[in-house]
Length: 489
Ligand code: NDP
Image (cartoon, rainbow, N blue to C red; front, side, top):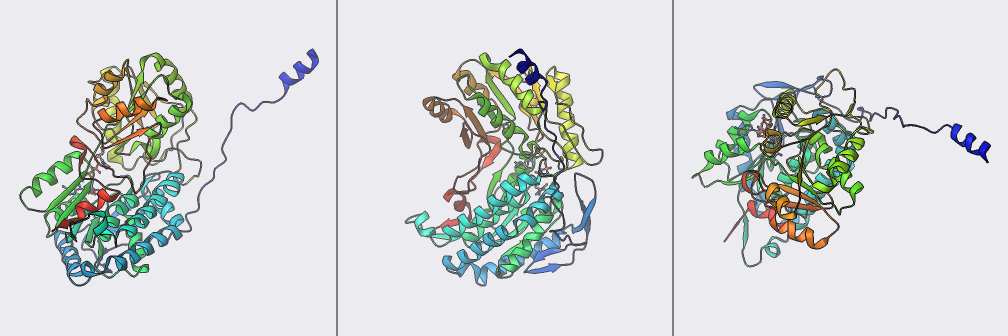
């Protein structure tokens, strides 16, 4: 017996698993050397341009147009013409056909889009492949279903499209945000001029190819690229509605600009979500939810669970388990299928994250980063957790928009509510407990547009998404997402 035990002890037990590289091939995507603006179904040669890069390697990918105010005005005029000359009068059932077509083409070409999204934006391929692309297609399918049922969606209200929608989107979910904006606008009978973020224009430009393939009438979807100046020109232009997703600062500036103009506005801005963990929760499941809540998409998520509130009695256990789990996160090449955390989207964003992390250390919080080797080129930041955080610290107040978590504690549900709501934002929240009654009690008191229970960062086209307070107003997704694109008699 003793001999057997000795042998068993000597047997080789693997102490860890190494992952072999599993890079997705770039071959499937053809990136043009230069892109113009997509106006009236044609490519307009841009007057000015800039280079878009891969944030993982700083390698230049393509030359992209920087739209001038005159180019933006031309795109808006084309959208207006398309609105007045046919699109708005088309029966909903016909508009639905185009949306269904777009959805199907996105599904067919999803690998191509996923690779390009990861190349240009830095997010891990497994996220662009399994989250961004399926959800983008799902949004087109979902709103295709509503296009011929608007009278049923809003009974006794006679819905009409508002006209030309100017849409400005950010860099964290480039194609998905495009889908969130374009699908409901078209379903409701509007035409659009959309501007992707300066750092991530390529999937929006590839989408123009889908628009052509679906034979959408020219001018219904127009895409202009460039930095904030192009966004500002859309806001100033002859549009009937602005839909904006981005920073609270720019959102406020747009709201000031539009005040009194009669143009409609929806804003989806920043967040500083509370992820609240009670001592009766399924702890290992909660740890996965915490990791997904903050490290998904490098933390470049407006609804990221960036403030973790842990019930005091389990604080030590949670922090220990969390640190252990963080050690298994793989940081690196976004195109590697094993990668959990990709590149930071831009140098500017990296500097912002570094600045706030320094502030956290100076204010007295304790920092932990698992050992990981970051690539030499490109923009990278290791997954980070701060403990000993006070409510007043900048890392507990400001949106970091990176893979940085602040851990705070509470004793009672009432204290959790008070601390969670102590923020100028109100986009989302998470609650981890096994008690259904507690979930309902908490959810009712959270000043947040979305409250997840025993999960985090789940999205569905049928579910409205949007904020309270400085996280913005208006809802995207669901039947609610149609309303900002409609007028009623
Ligand atoms: P911005 O708000 O600047 O960018 C969002 C979009 O607005 C981009 O397309 C941008 O163009 C455009 N834009 C910029 N200035 C103007 C303007 N004056 N008028 C009209 N459109 C404009 O966000 P940033 O990219 O600068 O990121 C800064 C911070 O904002 C992040 O650190 C993060 O905290 C937050 N953020 C929040 C997002 C969310 O989903 N709620 C998304 C992105 C950022 P351009 O790309 O050229 O700047």
